[in-house]
Picture 1 (cartoon, one colour):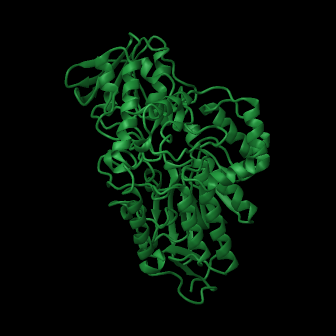
Picture 2 (picture 1 turned 135 degrees about the vertical axis):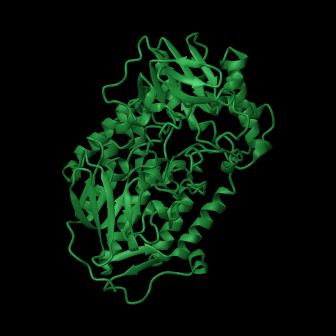
Picture 3 (picture 1 turned 120 degrees about the vertical axis):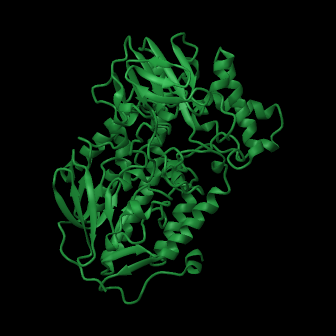
Length: 551
């Protein structure tokens, strides 16, 4: 049994992005006292930091918003099919004001460490400004894609010009007019940035390691009747999205491409290409699990690249050939491929011409030195785990989370980790997170966590943490789910392969949001099966063997 010790607050929330904001609101609604910490000077999380030109969401605006409140849906009006970063950040600020959340957030204050006190059954959280808070629980909403990956090249500090990362973009912006610019990386940020930089730069050199499949966004203003319909049918649409695979209502035909004859097959592909966005990849149900089906779709996109890019050699460099479409994150863009038709834009494949180092005048490859005034390192993030392991979490016996996860992240449901009582993560590793609509994932996580804390309070329980056997069971479920997909056919940040020295494992639960939600709900309904619960109200050990967990 564990007795409780008084704390400064019931819960510390780390982060004031959309996950942290909803956690703060939902916890307060249940009567918990909360202190939130945010490293930025305002709310928004990912959308506060990613202020680069062209930054835009790849989920449609009417789905990329909170669904828990009809009032929020009715009172906010999106202007475009795919919202820009400024509009999404404005939404975050509006929500913070509308729900009066700022009074419980410490801004410009990064959490440096969180140490679990076993005697008091509490967490001691220390921040960059020297402040300290004790709390019974910690909810880490630090972001799935917020830990910037350092540029992996020697000589970075020697560069005499200006250098930027999309995830740490200056608030005042960057003036590219008349400048020689290099961008390294053609992932989502690079694909959005490159067409915008090309509008200003005198010269633009794009260094590409792996070509990406990127689909046209076909962005446009929203029609008034779309907005009215979304508001009127919000409750039904929200519930449908919550019970869907991807957390968003996509028109699914149920057709498989292998069973669809020509010319219907090509007609459907062309139709969805013109509609744009992720609708294209969901046109057929077998694309994500069958290599033969996938290659038909991938070859269609390869043909589009050859149609758009005038120079056949450049088109060949831009065309992915060695991994399935969708095995890496699908990118949506505006004029990405067409940008390479401009005379002042040059593409360098670092597979053919590796970058050797950064030198004072620019980028040195195995073939030559490219003199530039600005380098943009679109080199990605230490995804899913980095934002957590960069905080010095210390659990039982002083064990650090970073060391515990050195050989791979270990969680139960992607929500909690053995040895770290009362620590919860939102959209962290081994949850659906980045494979589904983040708003749907956030709401499911927050509601489950708040329900759990309410249960503990109502049953006079002080601590909760996963049992190791339950954690192993969940690792097996994550592995089993990904084996049914094509994700393992590509090196990607889904697997941590973009970070040198990071353990290689598939970091996301790939069986969909609805399946995940049902599993979480079943575990909660069974008295939090697989967790150890302790406190005055714990009359008997609570948990399960591996066999019981899987039942």
